[in-house]
Length: 274
Image (cartoon, rainbow, N blue to C red; front, side, top):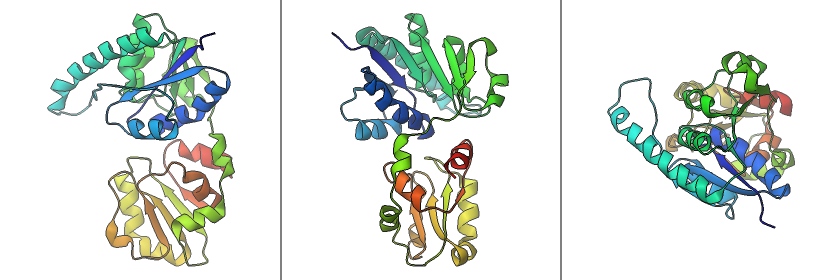
């Protein structure tokens, strides 16, 4: 008997991929065939094939809709159109029972294609106020799930449910000892972790690094600074450890951490953690 298929989509940042990483193994346990639609060069094109090499990954064109002037605003609509055609072909070939979208601009043509082909589309919104991509995709969705009750004021009430955060089970299974090996801290100090997301936050990074001498007097500092934001000049400090972003390392780093500075919906997760 042929397995039923679920298509997952979402990308652009790790936040648009992490929930899919959490539910994908659970769908497989329920005996679904799971396939993924993402962009050609987004972070999901690295994270999903690395974590789930057996899951078919379909790369499509995607364009970003910007609220500011950019010459790319003239070309990206054509990329979205190309992505829509590609998504239609993939959906027709895979014949999924449903499409689950975590957001990001790559998910927009997928949601549109699902609606056009009569495939149920489910969207998950993890921020208090929906991002632009999910706002565009919501008319094509059959149902929307949110992390925060406050978000229900910003989405169609008749097809929305607040479910709260979904936590990856492996985050509970880390080892503080492995975390210490990853960071090589020598000082016997509490550990402070700063999380700015996979793309980082310029404001957070500047605030931490400009106050680093004072912070290191009291803490061993783990800094998740975002892709392309490493500062090689800071590697001389024995109780400062920086990562662009982490995947399999995160459970171990969490288990050795005493305090966290974070942004967005990660605060909800970290309150749950402690």
